[in-house]
Length: 363
Ligand SMILES: Cc1cc2nc3c(=O)[nH]c(=O)nc-3n(C[C@H](O)[C@H](O)[C@H](O)COP(=O)(O)OP(=O)(O)OC[C@H]3O[C@@H](n4cnc5c(N)ncnc54)[C@H](O)[C@@H]3O)c2cc1C
Image 1: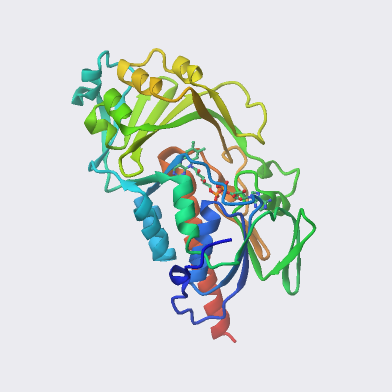
Image 2: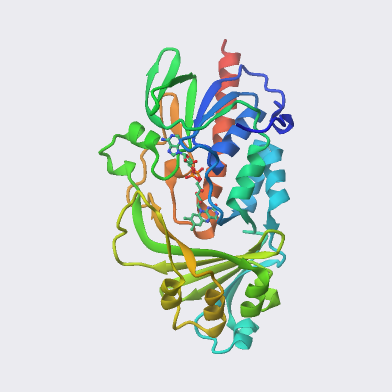
């Protein structure tokens, strides 16, 4: 259960009658949606399939737009990110040639800068996922998160929605916001099990990810590049490197095109040998080869699945809606995925507020 610090979830003075809302899924979007709903005066219960908060240790970055939405949802959500995250120090987002430079010196020179974009338009704050999730969860009032509750089905009646879980238990709510991720059960229940819109498809990209000491990154990329967020481009692949954990660690992502089908869409991550990544960038410049060489012997590999082939034609039916990856899992480029989920949360809180204040006015 969550800690007992209730201050960031104190209601900011909602004039309307609050709703009793069930949030399904305690990932990043489920937790921040809950914090937003509580702050805007609703009663919330969260049902999570896992036995605890289960976000992995990889890094994630949030744009300025997402951070503004966080502030409006509940200022604590943004404060928590600022507490555990790192903003880019450089005023530009820079895209470097990772392939052609034949020496590390050349790779660090302006000659290798392919293009750049003002960070004011699209600046990122990066953090370690699990650290941010736990920081946010500290603010959830004790007793509102129920773990080991896997949504299996639901039905709607005049009183609201009845949720059924795989352990045989049930729960009642006036409305449901399902943030149950890319394989969302709620989406399948909402759109139909056989509907192609219920299933994500392989984007034919895989992401290798490792977190290494910043000193290793400095050795490969140089001080300036290692201490800032950088994209490194090359044929059939691109890389991201950015500092996390107060500039003590460097998060390294290698995104590689993969023409083969992914073996099992239910397992999107695998631990693989570093040699697989080394082979994928073997023709790149020495700076990038050295960076990849600094990765540990075992590296996380993520299959990128998204809803681009079969986007859902609706995200809501009756009193149930889907949000975050459950609604529109996307390829993680330009920090699209979770950032869109943050926008979902703010839209939902605002729409509820408008609808409830209209119903109060009309009696
Ligand atoms: C390599 C990679 C890098 C990325 N980088 C970024 C980035 O920098 N910036 C960005 O904005 N996005 C990024 N994304 C996308 C981002 O990770 C996702 O959009 C985000 O994590 C989705 O959060 P969520 O809470 O919607 O889903 P999830 O994190 O998947 O959480 C879903 C939760 O629901 C629970 N659950 C599932 N089924 C049930 C059920 N039946 N009943 C109850 N609970 C259930 C799960 O256990 C889980 O806790 C990246 C993605 C990848 C693959």
